[in-house]
Length: 328
Ligand code: ADE
Ligand code: ZN
Image (cartoon, protein in one colour):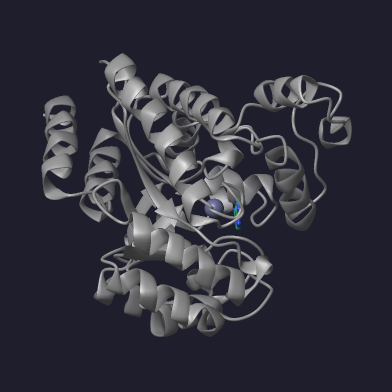
């Protein structure tokens, strides 16, 4: 059987940067970021908060639209090699031009040009979710929402929230999410990764999201699991990320299987693959091993992902046809 086609809904573009690519950029620019790498050349960090610092240090080498063009090509090549046919990635005007609208448009154009080339080369489709960084604060998130609203359309399809979940509350970002919704963007937010069930509940109630990034800690509150299942809220689950960051001790202890059994719509993504030493192929393999998941489960999960993607229906039809052909 050919490699399973995969739909990925939760991928941070900078977080997917191969370490060798970032090292090369640093060399070109005479920047010293040697401290973020380990002796094997991979990214080195102690915990989630240190990970965020290392992430931002790596991202500091991406200074021009051209750098994002090359980054996008490198990332999509890796994704396509794992069988990904459709990917939604988080993009942050904070990193792409410092939330200046005309600079953001230039970065976006470069990313889209690379995505067009990758589509021709590998058949992979990319769409963007504009994402403020929570620990940069609500005021910057408002500026980010303005960038998002100005570029919303068939390519920028969503608005999200990433960064340190322990800082601030979802409600602080309500203005930004309202503006994004009014611009026609679909909504998701990281919650229930470092915050508990209340964080997930607040994201649903205060931001009106239809998907949750991670959301796995909802498992700690059975009533919340029922609410998520009843409302059909989709979880962008990134098991390898959670395990690499020690949220759970191992694959068998990860709650994705229980959430699915409780009727929650779960999807599978890599988050920041080189940081967590993962790929979509590894995620599928580890899940199959840990929970005895077969093709029937992966078929269902990938179709759930296609249904929950923020793309237009014509694009969804293309994805669905590829999934149906493979799993027929
Ligand atoms: N930014 C990149 N990866 C992230 C994660 N797993 N959680 C929150 N913010 C992030
Ligand atoms: Zn994430």
